[in-house]
Length: 113
Image (tube, rainbow, N blue to C red):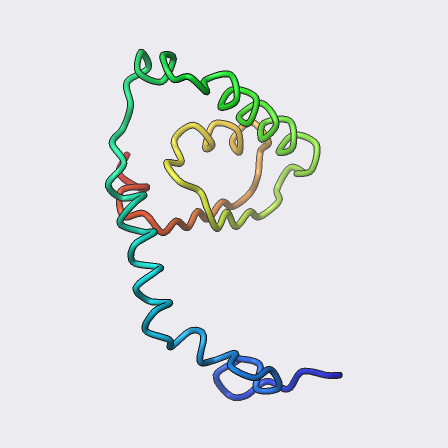
């Protein structure tokens, strides 16, 4: 079945496709998620190191670093739709020598450098 797209770019062949974006409960949920991430405080290095899951965080960070090095090429353009607090990741993308980087995040404080 082919999907048909209306003028708004949304799939008109899928029941409820545009309704999802306009649904009030969805807007409330998205706002709650954004508020949660926006309310998180920046941790000091000492607080971060004292975390009970610091080893998991370090593993995740290492996996991201390796993935960036393996799957990006010099000059690539990158769209990071969940960039979070981007300071640490900017170093990773810089080392990979990407041409353009665009970071997007739902939390309001993610881009305060």
